[in-house]
Amino acid sequence: MAGNSQRKGAIRKTAKKPAAGSGGRVKRGLEGKGPTPKAKDRPYHKAHKAQARAQQDQSVRPKRRAKSSDAEWVAGRNSVVEALRAGVPVTGLYVAEGAERDGRLREAFQLASEGGISLLEVSRTELDRMTGGAVHQGLAARIPAYEYAHPDDLLARAADEKEAPLVVALDQVTDPRNLGAIVRSASGFGAHGVVIPERRAATMTASAWKTSAGAAARIPVAQTVNLTRQLKAFQEAGCMVVGLAADGDVSLTDLTAPDGLAEGPLVVVVGAEGGGLSRLVAETCDQLVSIPMANDLESLNAGVAASVTLYAIAQARTSRVS
Image 1: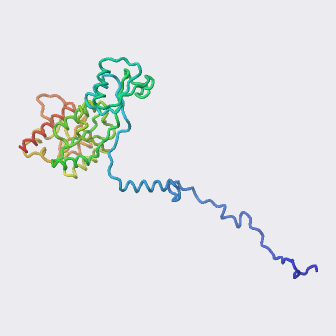
Image 2 (image 1 turned 45 degrees about the horizontal axis):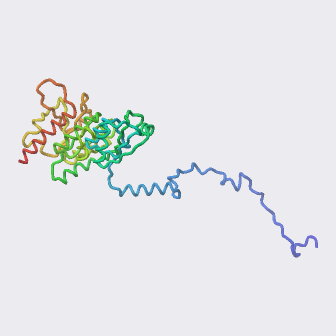
Image 3 (image 1 turned 180 degrees about the horizontal axis):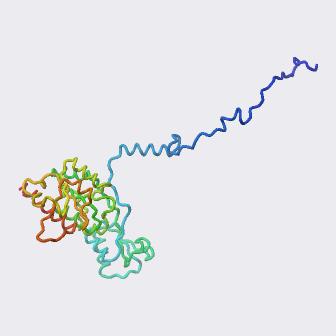
């Protein structure tokens, strides 16, 4: 019966509210939620988990020695032979195909054989590429990245040997040959290590290795990000920090006099030729020491000045022990 809502199958119709438009029910869904967080800031993202693992590893990881950026090449027959004679840690000797066999090449082969160094023959084009286009004369040697010590290791080395620390720090020394000469003197006169800045300073290149005559393998060389800060750290550890300066107010003979400062924990800072110590480094030193000269010669080469000073300190310490 029409209009009978009680019959089977009938549907009661009720009044409906108007459907909400974009300005109504779905308005909140259209609102912005701000910028998307970076991957490392999203807890569920793998970048966030990797960062958390790295931070956890860093908190328990011991101090590691820094390494120079990459391996180095020594190119040229004379240079390679000199490096092998000096005990530079060569990891591979490379000779160009068809290279003329002369006395230098035969000596390089013999030294490599005696030192257990691998010998590889490559094309001249490949050798040009590996050495960056250097004049290699058909022979080149590969040197691994130098592994630097941490400055704290030098004090620990002195403690292990039950000696008063003696450390050499270099300020603005940019000539690798001077660095090698100072490393050699430091090893020969009983220093416990050498500290160099990471920037604007000579590093342990093949030239420094050769000049050190193998001493770089016997004494640690440490790098520091900030030399002034490191000198202050040495002072806090009980070391006296002295800088070499032509106009120093203390003579080297006074420093090495009986019961003088040379007998205690000591850090000797050597500056560059000409410029000497930088202002901040000079102000940080406890004393500035001059080397007595017989005439008006302005200054000594950095390597020579370091050698003279270290010899005098070694003599003072030896006389005390005897």
